[in-house]
Image (cartoon, rainbow, N blue to C red; front, side):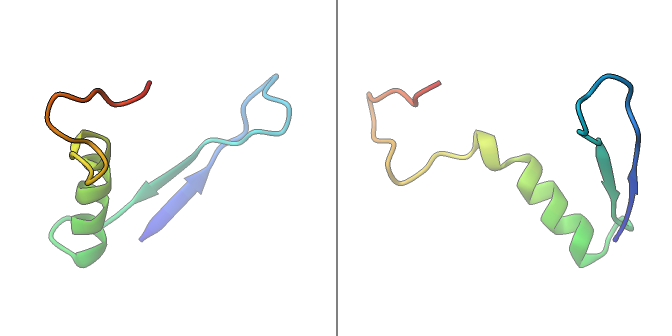
Length: 53
């Protein structure tokens, strides 16, 4: 997996970092799963309940 860190003006020390993985490799598969993590239901969410946020 590779990454690049960028400098951004007026961000008070925050630096955006971009991670890249070779398609078809295990790191790529993990990144795809992480990309879907916010959309997956959790055990704490039951039918008829709402997720916070």
